[in-house]
Length: 556
Picture 1 (tube, one colour):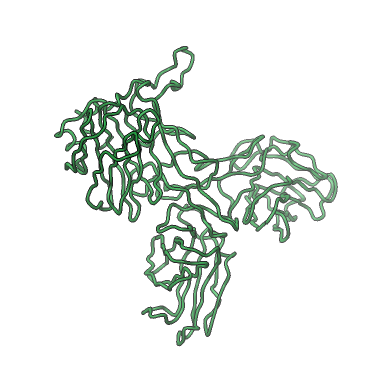
Picture 2 (cartoon, rainbow, N blue to C red):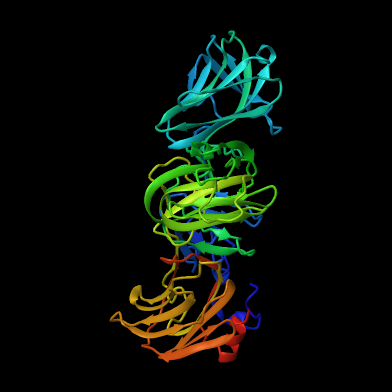
C-alpha cells in the first residue's frame, strides 16, 4: 500500500491492491473484516459476502501478462487426459501391458513399465484437436534389450519422429502441424520382441512448438498459467498492476512458428536462413534466429524477407526482436517500408498501416538509408490486430487462420451499501494507474443502483483523463479534464458530497463543479475501447477527504 498516507488509511472503506486473486475473483485488502469464517462457523475460508471484485474475460484463454521475473506468461494446457495413467481406458493400447511403480525422473515411483505383447506395441489417444502447430512429449527410458531400439512419436500425419532409446531417462518431443482432430501416441521396437520393456512417464500434448513444464492431467485436461477469467497482474511497469484490455484478435496465423511463413527473395538476395531453439521473451527455447542477406544491394529488386498474409484492412502489426550485436531491420505492413535499430535486448516493434501482409527482412532502396547487406536477428511473438492504432498484449496463435480472440477484461463490485462498505451519497474515489506509451487508463464507472445513466465515468480523451458525470436523463452534469498525461504512474481522485464535486490529479486540484446528487453503490473497472488499463491501486473513501488530504493522496 505504497501510495496511502498511513494516517489516512483508516478513512478508506475499500482498497484494491492487485495481489490476491483467483479465477473470477479479485480480492480487496479492505474491508479486512470480511476475511473471516462465515456465520455458520464451519467455513475456514473467506466469507461469501465479501466486497471483492468479480472478474470476467469471457470464455477464452488467449490472454498473456508479464510476470514479476520479467518473462511473458501465457495459458498452457495438456490436451491429453490421464496423462500419467497409462492403464486407463482413455488410452488406446495395442499389444502392451502397463504396470506402475517404476522409479521416475523426479525421484518418485510413479513411472510405468510398458511390456510388449507382440512385435508392434502401440499407445495412443484419438480425437485430439489442435488447429496448427502442436507438440507431443513423454519421458522414456530403454530397459535391457530395448536400449538401442527405436522409439517413435506420432502426431497426426507423417512425418513422425524416430529416436534411439538409451538406458537413461530422456524427455522426447515432436511438433507437427495439423488441420483437424488427430490421434497422437507412441510406438517402440519396430519390430519389438514379446516381453520387451520400456519405461514411460508423463505424456503431454499441447499447442505450440515446444514441450513446456509437465502438466499432469486426470479425467480432464491439465491447465496452468493465465487461465480463463484469471485477473492479470502485470509487471510491465516494474510494479504489479491489474491489466485490463479491450477485445482483440491476433490475425497472424503462425505467431511463433516462423517456419510457417513464406520466404521471398529477389535480385541477388538469398532466402532467409532459420534456426530454431533460442530463448524467447517467455524464457522458453522457442525463438528463431533468422539471417537475412539481400546480396549486392544495387537495385530495389535485391531483397531477403520473411512474409505472411492475412485479411487486409487497417491494423497494427507487432513482434519481438533482438540481435547479438546492434543491427538494422526492415519491416513492411503492406504499406511503406520502415527501418528499425535493433539492440541486444528483446524489444517489441509495432507498425500501424493498411495491410494484408507483413514482411520482415532487408530490401534495397525505398529511400531508406544505411540498410545493411545482411543481418541476423531473433524473432518471436508476431501479431496483427485489425482496426487497431496500437498493439495490446501478446495473443498466441499457433495456426488458426481466422485469428485467435482475447475477450475484454471486466472487474466489478456491486451493492456496496448493502455490504456496509460505502455510503454512496458522499465519498471519494482514488485511482492509481500507469500510462504506457499510447495506452492510458480508460473507463471506471461508479453507478447508482446499477443505472449507468446515473454515474461517474472516467475515461481517456486524446491523451488526457476525463471525468464525466451523467444524470438520469443521460445528460452530462459535469466534464472535468486533466492536461496531457505523461508516461508512468499517475494518481486521480474524485470526491463528492451532495451536489458538489472536486477532482485532483498528481497532487493538484483539476476542477470543481455542481452535480445532481445520487447515491452511488456499484463500481466497474473495465477495458476502454481505445486504451489498455494498468491499475496499481483503487480505493473508495466513505468519509470525504479534505482538500489537503486530497493533495496528499494524489501526490506522486
